[in-house]
Structures are given as C-alpha cells and as structure tokens.
Image 1 (tube, rainbow, N blue to C red):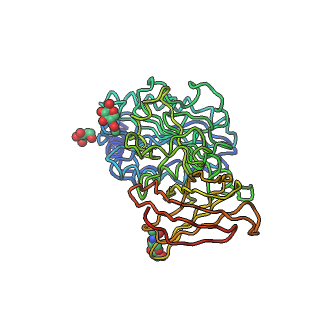
Image 2 (image 1 turned 120 degrees about the vertical axis):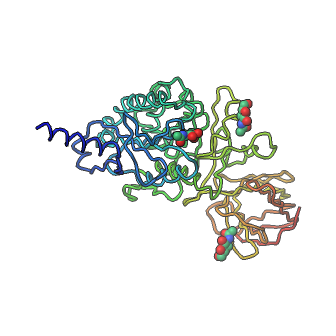
Image 3 (image 1 turned 180 degrees about the vertical axis):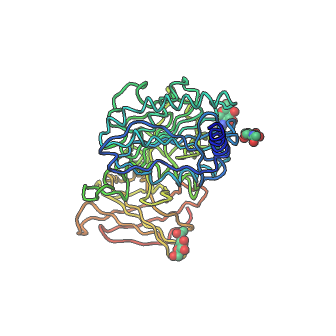
Length: 445
Ligand SMILES: *[C@@H]1O[C@H](CO)[C@@H](O)[C@H](O)[C@H]1NC(C)=O
Ligand SMILES: *[C@@H]1O[C@H](CO)[C@@H](O)[C@H](O)[C@H]1NC(C)=O
Ligand SMILES: *[C@@H]1O[C@H](CO)[C@@H](O)[C@H](O)[C@H]1NC(C)=O
C-alpha cells in the first residue's frame, strides 16, 4: 500500500513539475450556452512560444518571469461557447512586437450563456480572481506599471474593475468596444473609466448595438463615427455577422496596429460631423502635437491626453472595409466665381503614373460654393497614390443625372494631410459641368 502511494506521488510530482503540456482555450458549444455554465477562470500563459500556453496558477511555473511586462487579454460574452476568432492572432501579434508575458483570461465557463445578464453578472468576480493572481505577481517582483490589460466588450469592464481595485495604478487598459448593454448609464465605479489605469484607451465600433457610446478612457477612438463599420452587413439578412461584425471590428483594427503596415491616424474632435467637415485636422501640422494613432502604440499620445482637464479626448477617423484599414486624407481647397450660390457634392479621383486610381466621394452633406469664398473639403481616399499625375472631378447637386448647373472654379488646390511632405497640386480656371467627369493634369502650386 505504501509503495503504491509513493509511486502515485512520484508520478504526480514529475507531471506537475515539468508541465510540458500545452493548454488551450476552453471549448464549449451552443449546448453549454443553452444549459448555462458556472464561472471558472483559467489563465493561459504564453511566454516565448505563442503556440503553447501554460496554466498560470500558484505556485507559478519556475520559467515565469513576473518582472517582465505582462499583458492580459480578457474576452467578452460568448453566446455560442466558441473560442474568439481573433484570439490566436492577438496572442501571436503581441508576443512578436515585444518580449512580454501574455496571459489569456479564459472565463469561457461563465461567459457562455444564452442569457447575457448571467454572463455580465460574473464580471466583478472575474476581476477579483485576477486581483488574486496579480497580488501574487507583485509579491514575485512584478510592478503595476508593467501590467497592461486588453479587454474586449465585457472584458473591458472586467479590466476596469481590476484597475479600480488598484486605485488606477495599473499601467494601461485598452477597451475594445466595451459592452454597452447593462453598462450604459452606469456610474464610473460600475464600468470602465479613465481613472482605472495610468492610461486608458478605448475603441468604439458598435455604439448603436453592443458597444458603449459615451467616452470611457483618456482617449476614445471612434472609427467611422463609431456606429456602422464599412464592409459589415447593414441588415439582419447578413446573419450572425450582422450582430458581431461592427463589434469585432475594434479588435481587427487593434490587430492591424500590431502589424504596422500603416498607421491608423485619428483626429481629436468634438464630433464625427466636424471631422468629416475637416474642422479637426489640426494635429500633426504644427509639430507641437502629433495626431494620435490607434491601437498598440496609442500610449505614445499619453502625455498629450493628460494636458486636458479632465484628461479625456475623443478622436474620429474613417477606415476602409479591409485590413490594414488605413485612409489617406487630403484637403481639397476650391475658390469659385459663380454668380449664384451652388450647393453640391464633389467626387475626386487621383491617378498615378502607372494608371492606378483612387476615389473619394465627399457626399456626407452638400458643400456650399459662394463667389470668391474658399471652401476646404476633406477628401478621404482608400489608397495612397505615390505621385499624382492626373486628377478628375465630378460636381453634382443631388441624385439626378442632368447637367443643369456649372461650377466655375478660379483655382483648386490638393493638400496632402496624411503625408504632408508630399507636394501640393493646383489647377487654375476650370469649369465643371454637373455630372460630367472633368480630368486634368495638375501643376505644382
Ligand atoms: C526577467 O525579466 C526582466 C525584465 O525583462 C529581465 O531584466 C530579467 O533578466 C529576467 N529574468 C530572468 C531570470 O530571465
Ligand atoms: C512624456 O512626459 C514625460 C514626463 O514629462 C517625459 O519624460 C516623456 O519623455 C514624455 N514622453 C513623450 C513620448 O513625449
Ligand atoms: C499600382 O498598381 C500595381 C499593379 O496593379 C500594384 O502592384 C501597385 O501596388 C499599385 N500601387 C499602389 C500604390 O496601389
């Protein structure tokens, strides 16, 4: 009997010490969602190898270096029990940009439930469990400054609760479309807010359905105004995508920032409309304040966000429908001399030397052209053109096909905003006939 017991102990200690095993995210199904799940939190720790997770529990694995920067990823509500589609890519992206510990907070048991309020009811408890682990990490030499939490949807509020438990001394929290339902209208201690960490950045991509509308961080990014994202289905006939596409876009935008194919630049502004009307394109050009960039590197803007009182900034920008999502901004300055006021829309197309073209329709609201008054329109292009060889313009007054009106242009100037080092392009003396494309070769201004 004793011999048997010793063998058991040996086998036990060998397997727990070495812990060669790789663990994966809890896989559940729709059946679990219907039956409901009770809360269980597993911490999946990724160190050098993003393909293999260890379970982080007390006592910590000897290979775990608690003094390193540590990033927690906290998912949200899981109506079907599946693993979040973006999870692997996010872990991989984070471990590649920096030598850090990445901890996936797997609370799939607890988040998986057809009843959203049951899942959201677990958020405070998840935060308490995380605090226990972080307390142990602090005892092992970690510092709150080096702790970063990325929370998606409900996960954003969990991160906020953890931050609150440490009086806002956590290094950083990023909220990716923080959950709106059951959190909107709640006081700051019952949701994520800017006092929960030294720096809180938030991306709002679905403010009319699953996301949170009001600003929550030191900087709040509103892609495409925060409501509907390009490329996402607009109707219920889009199926499941209709419900999650806008919401998930916040994560895909963040992922894109890790790849660094292009910087997603945002413009501090009071409203999306003011951004569209070109009223907020002042950062970046005086060199005093750069424009904030969305995503992983948003904390480079921390100092500038702290200059405001309270330290809260909203930033707006547009994106394309696919990664890397960047939009290229130009100002189109136009001086006209029509006797009567003309109201209408401008579509502008740029062509490079290889014949590639990119087009911007400035149609969110009609522009008003008055004699001898300069109008500056913000044009947003889905691609950048290396060297502008040709420009074409269309003027239209509405959803009509006639050619009733003319727009008499004294001069037009194209000013690159995203790449201000590029040359400005001009053209003098031009008459646009309504709904007719007018092409020309610009000259340097
Ligand atoms: C732990 O990480 C810190 C910070 O990156 C580093 O300076 C230290 O050498 C690491 N310790 C070990 C034992 O690898
Ligand atoms: C932010 O401010 C701190 C303290 O004033 C300064 O040390 C640091 O270099 C600044 N960082 C940036 C990115 O400007
Ligand atoms: C222009 O077109 C060529 C060929 O179609 C393509 O390879 C290139 O990436 C394009 N350039 C830009 C800036 O989009």
